[in-house]
Image (cartoon, rainbow over all chains, first blue to last red; front, side, top):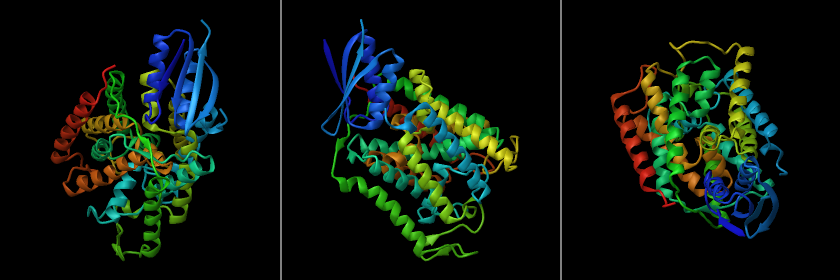
Length: 73
Length: 360
């Protein structure tokens, strides 16, 4: 199941809060987070790593990035 | 991640660099325990422009221009310049006003709170505890859905406005240079005595500001974020940067014989513990609701964030109010008007926090 969270345009620390809330709801699998700054990209990846998730892929999309986070079930 | 400065080692290195440079700025002429103080320096700029007329705090501090322009350069070199705005601008303006009023009751922003401690001013402990308490209140709002909404992309020229204003300030210094013993040069006010009269040579201040602006943009250094992430996410990333700054400034102060421990007679400080504490509760809460410490708001302004620029303009207005209405503390302590403004600020920030929450 793919869950997409749009954190574009949100200032610090909203993208991380949204990511952590999603991780809390979804214990494993795949999450897609959309961000539009490098700071958000770094912060989201760092927070996900701390929760045992992996950054599976970072794709440039529009003016930002599509972050794909994954955790084995 | 290909950004070295955003790694753990990177943020520690940046913290150390800022700590050493701040202490050196004091050695080179900036006021004691005020190598860098974003709140104080923005206040001095406000005075130099004549927007308040407290004669002891008037100087166009080149460090502030350096912060914005250094970040602007870094953002362009690394293709991170993102002109954006539109996330509750009036709220960010108001938060800037009250952040400044709170900081001037304590007499320093978080940067200076750490530098005061590193210089042996133990009153800073109360300020730092207040800062942490204010940030903690802010994290409660963040946890319950506080959100100022999305910004949106805008024209490149919009992102250039604030850096151009900073460039304009540098041009003002160039055409209205300080004249020894004179309180005014052309249209710009200078301090003949007091902290505003103490400053490192212009070019050094500017270069150090540019270096710090560059490093801080790359590393996302933020003094409020350091404490917020620790309280909110138990994340130590930014916090180790802040601790590195404190330790580096402390060691440099020892080496330069700038360490004078105690509570009484500290430079540009007062010993009213409760108001040191409460002033920084207000500042900490306002920074948290706005998403960044005053330094970070300058770095964000440099990378095109128009909302962060409005926070800084709010700080300028806050500084003008603080001195025109006698809200700012002095060595003698906090003022009655300042305490009233403190409560108005706290109520305003709490209302912002309570009423600007999305249903989760």
